[in-house]
Amino acid sequence: MRIALINSKQDTAGVTIRHHLETLLAAGGRWPLAERHELAFCEVAGRLIHQDRIDEEVDADLILFISRHASVHPTPALTVHVTGNYETADLGGEPGRLAPAAPAWMHAILGNLAARAPEGYRVSYEVTHHGPTELSTPSLFVEIGSSAIEWADPAAGRAVAESILAAEPQETINLLGFGGTHYAVRQTGIALSSRGAFGHIVPTRQIGAIDPDLLRAMQEASGAVAAYIDRKSLSKDEAGRVERMLDDAGLLLLSESEIREASGLAWTTYLRVRSLAEEIAPGSRVRIHDLKGEGNPAAVRIVPDLIEETIKSDRPGFLNGLDRLPVAHLSSGSAGVLSTFIGFESASSRLARDITTLCVKLLLICENAVIDGDHLVLRKVRFDPEKARRHGVPKGPLFAMLAGGKAVEFEGRRITPDAVQTTSVKRIHIPGLERYI
Image (cartoon, rainbow, N blue to C red; front, side):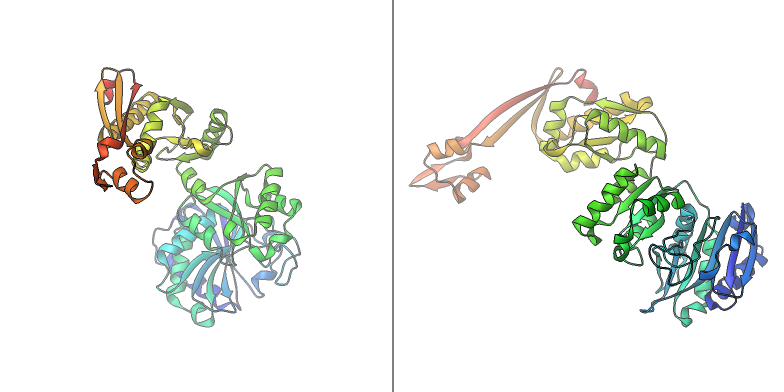
């Protein structure tokens, strides 16, 4: 593709970055951007924020504006963002207009900046702001901030130049972001730890400007397939209003953990996993463990009593064990972990064996369990409050001691734990149980 790198003569940071780009390219190093794409440098006299329709003058499929970032609270920073105005156009562009974003490119460059930033520099997205807005070509700003000292810093200029030249966009999950500060802290963290790539991001202070038409423009300009709401930064009413608009627009809302879990799967496969989960248990929550890549999702059913007893016995151990398996588990309200799991059809039989084996091993370790043919027999000894009361023991600290396995003295009598215990036996039928031991 053809990529235009545009800077302004009056912008010290842009000039610094361009110098390092040209120096690195002249040195003859192997840079993905130069090897795979056609690069063209363009320098303008005016400010970049006023370069509406510059894509009519440059022949490019992508525009990278290299620029400075200024702040009323100067701090060393390297940032990326797309341009647009949710409300008024105080810094270029047109009111209520958004430029086409390049989420995968911003994601790639952001990751490179995080790896190369000089000590003391913060790396982040910025929310959508300023012009130009009147562009048909996808674009992004890559900036050095936030004072004249940093704009001319050769270490920062080289770090940004290397981050641009090393950019290799991968398959991303293109997202819209709602809420947070100007520096989009939560969205930055998500992007740096997942395939979640943000296009347009709305800060909390401008959330009231978003209406269905502007939301639709954000989605189209970002190529977004889902959205993320920074709920801690919004009121319940604000978050609810955005959520309803997303639902009306048919745009999937993902939590931070869901974005990270989805990052291991091809997006179409992830959607099929969610669809299958809805068929199995409408309204259920899906948690993806080590299920990765592409495949045809299939339901994997395990003996319900086996899952129930394993969760009672060692829920953390069970969930940790699932983290090593190509599986997604479902949970629904008070039911906890459901006994139907999701894996790939091609490996469903193996997955069923592995989950069953995990359960059996945990129960043999954590419970008084024995194998009897095709039955796992659980013998449970529990403190029985009613028996304790029949022995005259008052509810309170003595109950706790007996429940903890300690004998107590009461009214001259010694009462042992076994005197106030009840034993129950549960038999779980597991066909071919010997294969799971």
